Image (cartoon, rainbow, N blue to C red; front, side):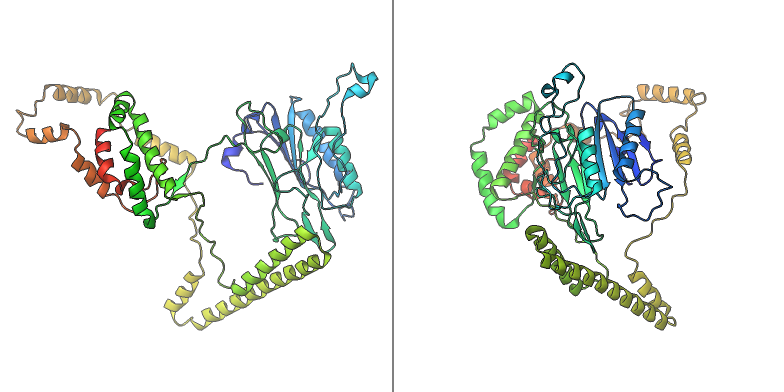
Length: 483
């Protein structure tokens, strides 16, 4: 399992002694909720698995339940949120994973008992209508622990899409199961369309909540503001210049001077707002992020790309219409795509080896062909230990001896206090130069700094491009001088 460094710091405890499963206890501060989170990544073998039963007396969902109860009993607190993800090989169909009207008011004999009610009543959808014994056991586990499947309950997976396309057929066996408290967070569950394996990857996105704002289940947090980005468009330069002039004609310069005296940061924010608003009017605002296309292998040609695109079109068509003939065609295209990639890769490697053998007498050509195949640079192994780095920089920044350097520092301080550069022949004292350095910054200096800005550079946190400043320098120059 791979975890980001920003997530590792929230780990409180781990359990790795269980077979085909990992249990991690995260601190509640990770999501900003009141309870810690127990995350479970698990794989359950199929019902007709060839694994010997003597190594694991308890099989299937019962084994998962025993592991859960053992971990929960090992945790001090009773308040806990649970997230289970993995291949459970359980087919639940459209069975309900919650109890309708789960309240002790309907059982008079339990009114005085402490009964943990579950008000969860969100229905779910499923593309898989089959049910097996593991599926029934999983439903019982959900009802007993108050956990519920996210498949078929999110915006990105409203229909409960299939997660497995194997030779035996299609099924929904990969789940994300959470307690009712997780549904109160902004969440999104998705089944991705990727064919590297028979099982599609599933992802769960959760946004931390650090306030008490009430949200509907599944509603994303819209209070998080996104930084607007602008891209300079040369064809909009004249329009931008006209919009800037119209905006500045209505701008009160005296009020701006008052803002500088009161709060210079407020004045700068207003200048930034003027430039960005004018850029928005000129259609320079953009939300798309340019990504560099991944560098594919040299044997991966247009024929492979076309077949891959055709394969995914067929898959999306099946997920939409559930046609058996389309599923059969998808399987054929998937196998054809794999065979084509395998054959082209083998043919390319064979040709590459033949070229190397034929160029053995020409060392220059030989190493040129070798370097052409090195797509990534090999990173050198770091042989310096952490303790050596610490000692090195500790000695680097601690070179002064406080015993022997005390007299030297005292002599330096006395020299600075009694030294007059005007009377010293070794000092170059220029009265005119001091006057220039101490005077106010002029409009000419600001204009020269603006004109020296390079075009095409990335914008800073204020999202202002260099071109946006250069095209309004006649007014912006004097305003910056005042700031």
